[in-house]
Amino acid sequence: MNILWAVVVLGVMGVLFGILLTWTAKVFAVESNPTRDAVREALPGANCGGCGYPGCDGCADAIAGGKAPVGACPVGGSEVAKKIAAIMGVEVGESVKKVARVVCQGGTDNCKARFEYNGIRDCVAASTLSDGYKTCKFACMGLGTCEKVCPFGAIHMDESRHIAVVDEEKCQSCGKCVAACPKHVLELRPAAQKVDVACHNPGIGKAVSANCQTGCIGCQRCVKACKFEAIEMVNGLPKIDYSKCRECMMCAEACPTEAMQALFDERQVAVINRNICIGCGMCKRTCQFNAISGEPKQKHFVTDACTGCGQCAEKCPMNKKGEKCIVIKTRNRPRDPQAAVEAPKPAAKPAAPVAPAAAKPVEKKTEGV
Image 1: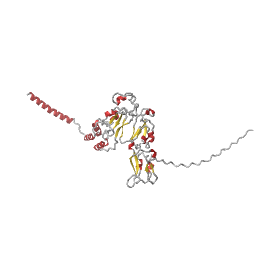
Image 2 (image 1 turned 90 degrees about the horizontal axis):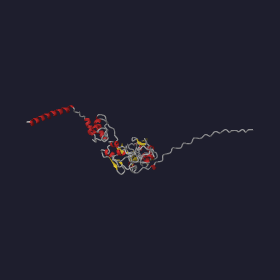
Image 3 (image 1 turned 120 degrees about the horizontal axis):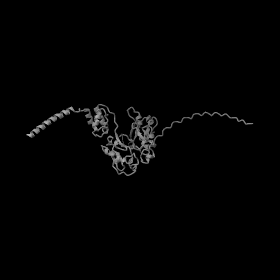
Image 4 (image 1 turned 30 degrees about the vertical axis):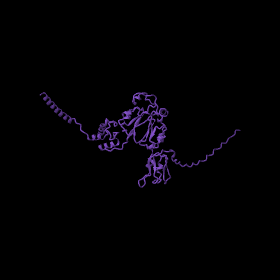
């Protein structure tokens, strides 16, 4: 009998609790936001925090609430941004994919060790000991702190040179490695850019070269070599304005220490289709490197001095068929600066006639008596 009453009591309690939970769920229910849910579904689900919000849920809340742009997710890139823009009913511009790059070439082959470090395999811990074990206090420690925090396996350590190496194909530009590096040798830069400053030591001259063979010495040759005013010196280091850079790579060519890096294998060159060229001379007048030769109304040609900046192709007029005679292609041999066409010298102005000098009056001397 007691068992029966226990069963009845438990059954009644179960019904009551069920009614209570149902009522509580209805009273305190959070209304679903279809837009927010659709945005969350479009996000990649990496939960890396690169957007600045706590995971993809936080990012979805911010985008749906109008607190973050549709392109807030760095991992998803332009494709995810377009999907979210369609959900939000807005337009999105073309976003520039960025990747983490090592702003240092201070491996042990270029930057020697001041002492042997046998401590914790962590850059933060090692940097607290006399600013690190390398001769340059701005150099990559190569102890793997960035490698540990990367959720995509896009960074590994070169154990022979003790420096970080980024796999740009795997990098999702979440920025975690940038935030974790105590030496600030990692930066997010445009993935398509072929020219980079690979040093962040603000020193000048021997203060840099004595510690690292490939450090920027602040000579400003890159600034002088750039024809497009895309480089300026900021705190002793060249800074590239990528909106102006035309990837002519003259800055890297002029750099005496190779602190300015460029993908010379991907350097381009202008090619003139001589079957279409009418010899208008627009390309020759535009070229700032004297790399185009040809007389007016005759076929022009490009020399090996071409840097591939592409200005000539932009200025080249179209013919009646909508064709341009200049195309830009990848070079198949190195640039030859000696091949530049000698710039025409301005005609000498005739010398102005010189007026004859006025005759000086002859002084008469009076001899004393």
